[in-house]
Length: 141
Image 1 (cartoon, helix red, strand yellow):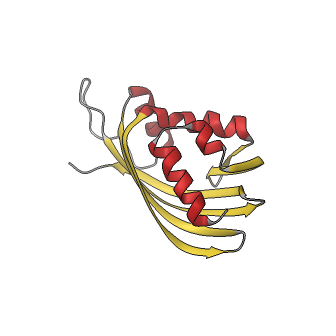
Image 2: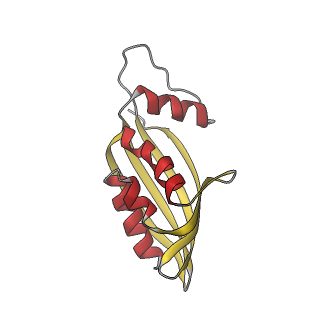
């Protein structure tokens, strides 16, 4: 696996909202650090974490490879999606430091913009460890 093939799979898993497709990118004990302080390890934990993308709609993922070498690489990624449920909005609201958008009850849910960096290490054709650093905010109207 290369960073390019990993990012192709990452993009497909996110845009298709498919937890098993996401977990299939990783080795049996693969680790995904979705923040510097939180890690999911193994297929079951990876799939459980990735279920949150099922609360997103109209997902658009773009990426650029920044560095590639045998066994690893770094990519810049950019995602936009429509928040499809109040549940996802509350997950985002609790986990971000950017503050809540000014919403009144009944207002439409926002379209979000995420921008980040992913660093991954590969072995035997699968991802052994991936780390992401990211930030999110509501898309400007």
